[in-house]
Image 1 (tube, rainbow, N blue to C red):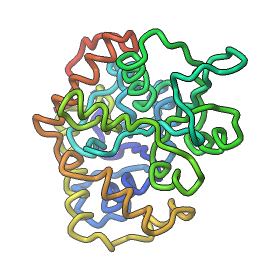
Image 2: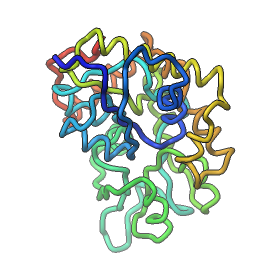
Image 3: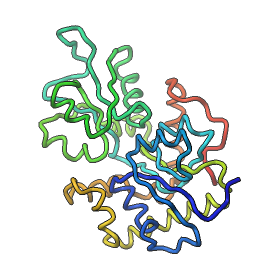
Image 4: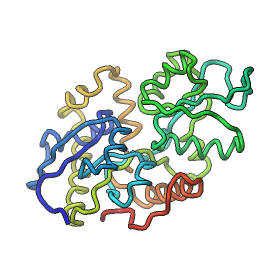
Length: 289
């Protein structure tokens, strides 16, 4: 069992993650002798690096966790769950997913990686509303999705992150809100991203780190302007209003503690993914502590 005082920590440069972890990154709280070697990468890269167990503690999409549960366990803090915060399906004006293309080719759907929660939700949605409809899925990094739809290299795009705040300015139309669809079907929040810790780390250490993340979130809520340059430094291309919308949407009470409702949402998400053949059943407990 790994048990030392220094741990590698990976999360994204998105405002919700930098907001959550800024008190740890800038030593604004007492870290209780723990040290963290911090790296920031996009979530899909974090998902891929988790296969190699690059980081002791890492941000992951809940979808990616499905194939990593033998290596990592979930923490109950730092997650992105919520209402009204799910991925969106967008397209150019006047398009419908069910439309037949003139050349009889399949509709091309750009998605932000096959290991993402967004893709899993898209699959759940299609199976529910368009069973049997064949489409061509094209995975790409999330920042390329809207430009691909605008350039007509893709017919539709599944967008995440700040895309939901700016697509209207690009003459793109909303076709489906996958988060709203999930909420209507389940009455539960949508599970997007989680914080996971290697299973070979001692349980007591996992609980300590879980508590430090909770303290970091509490500090961020109590002192939103402290170390704000840390958030801004990784979001230089975002307008201030978009940064605030991003934090407000993805950091909430579920981030601080999943609670019973958050745990129920995660359990149901994994159940649906297993029923759809996107995940294998888990053999180990979901949570580290």
